[in-house]
Length: 315
Image (cartoon, rainbow, N blue to C red; front, side, top):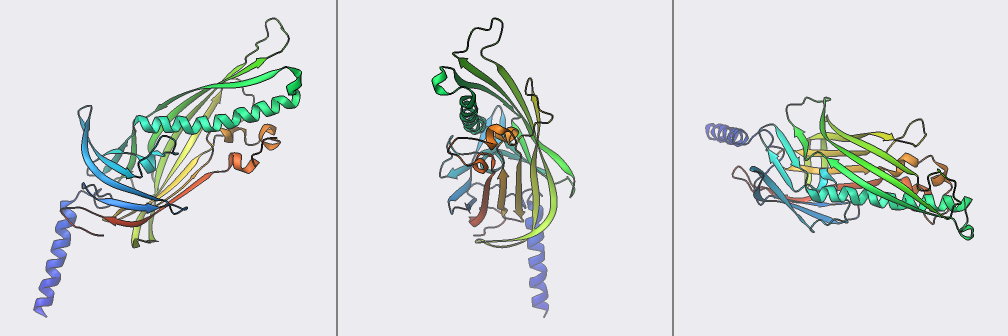
């Protein structure tokens, strides 16, 4: 009996020493080199995320992730899912946004603008058929100014209290190059419009929730919801209210494991502005209308993991 009590006391003291030797954030976001997490998405594709070597940029030290397969520019990279560099202290996890993510955002917007160009040219041909000799070529320029850091987690923010994750400004200049029109003197042949998107992402702790994945059962995971809110301004599009597509991401963090599940719905940032327009509703393209503006849904669940740590090791 006495021996059992002593063993129990020893276990409690050991667990307490483990907790106190780790920062509060590390208990839900392990950061030791060699730790890895294997996730599977809704299509059974695997993504392995490994804590790699520390790096120093502009005299500031960062920890880093490596991914298998390696991330590429043509992937729909998302800052919350695919960031490489991050820093951590006793209360916060901060992601550093790299140029690769800026390129990825631009690529994603470009894909939407390519569809917009096809829609605009198709609508134009309803008025000016190809045999009219009047043509429209839609061109565009994209300028992106993202914040270089993203506040993933702040342990001091209470439940149901929002914090700002980051902001990004996207400026899109659309040039409609019309050829073949008669000369109307001072009329502008190539009308331009500029749309500015200011995207603010916020986060809120929703409380605790149990999660079951292939990797096991995880009790009382911290559930955080990340949402974007976009302010849209245009210099000459005459509509009462312009609404860009938003993104909602939910992440579950398990104690001593880290991220065990991610669910994300991403609506088309630019195309959603024209979701109710006749250009999309009556499209002649071989693309389903719902497909043009429907969201991209991504779910990642933890399949297996290994925590390399001086405090504990689990697989």
